[in-house]
Length: 453
Image (cartoon, rainbow, N blue to C red; front, top):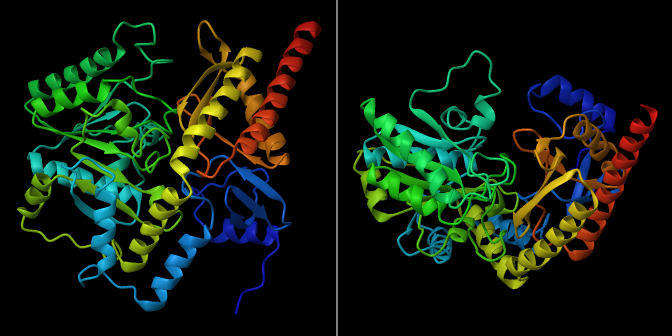
C-alpha cells in the first residue's frame, strides 16, 4: 500500500522536526519537493518539470528503465552478502577492470564514495607502513572523520578544530586563480614541486608519506582542471618517498569527461594511479562504490591478518545495477554524447564570456564544466556584491525558469555543470539562454547604479 502524499508544508515541518538541522536542502528559502524524475528532468508535486544541470549521481539519467529493471529482476531472485559465491560480483569486477590499465586489477566493493576513500587510505597506510597524507587545497573526499581530516573544503568550516599533524595541504593546481597560472612556463612542474617540498618537510620531521590523494578534476574546489603532466610529476615525487597515488574518481568517472572513461586518463597514457576510488555515478543513484588497486597493494592489505568484509558491498543487486549502468553507457553512446554536448555547452558559455564581463573563465572537460564569475577580469577578483545578486537570481529566477544549477569553489563563484549524461544540445541552449538573461539583468542593474551615483 502506498502512503498518501503529504502536502509540501507538512513535509517541511516533519523534516525540521525529525531530520538533523545540519542536513541542508537546496533553495532553503523555498525548497523544491521532488516526487519523480526521468532522464535529465525532475518533477515536483505539481508536476512542474525542472532541467537538472547538477546531478552527476543519476549518471545515465534518472530512473533509467534498464537500470531499474536490472535491479528489480535481481532483487526478485536473491540479495545477499559477498561471502557466498555469485557470478554478478566477479563478472562486474571483470568488466570494471577492463576499463582501466592492466595493473589496476583488484576490486573492493563498498557502498559510498566516503567508504571507498576511507578504505583507500587504509590500503595506502598498510602497504607503505606510513601515516601521513597529502591532499589539495579545497579538496573534498567524503563525510566521515578520516576524510573530513583530508578535506580542506570541510575542515576549514570547523571552529576550534586543529588540522591533523599527519595531513598536509598542497596547492590546488589551478591555472586560472592559483599561484602558478596559464602564463607560467611549466605550471605542472611548479605545482608538483610544491608537493615535493611538503614531502621534504615531512621527512625532516621524521615522518613518511603514505599517500597523495586528489580528485582527478576538482569539483567542490571549483571545477579545477590540473595542467597536463602534473599527476605524473607528483606521482614520481610521492613514489620516491615510499608513498602511493590515490585518484578519486567519485565525481568525474564513467565517461563524463568525454574523451576518456576516467578523468585521470586526461593526464596521458604514461600515468597510472596506484589506487582508484569510484562512487556516485557507478550505480545511477543506487548506493554503491568501489576501490580498485594493484595486486601488490591488495596482498599487503591481506598481510595485516585482518579479513575485510562489507555487509552490502558487492551484493548481487548492486552488481546487477552496476553492470546495467555500463551497458547503458555503451548502448546509448553516452561518453560520446558527453564529449559532443559538453563541447557545445562550453562553446555557448565562451560566447557568454565574450558578451558579459562578469564571466572570467570557462573551463571543463565533457559534461564537467565550470563558469567562474569575477568582478575584475584583469585582477580576477571574485564577485562579491554581484555574485550575491547572481546567487539570489539563480536561486529564484533560474528556479522559476525550472533550471537547477549550483555554485561552488572557495569563493562560491563558480557555476557548476555536471548533469546526467543524456543532457542534450537543446538542454544546453535552454540553460545558457536563461543564464544570459540573468547576466544581462546584472549588467543593466550595475549601469543603473552607476547612473544614480
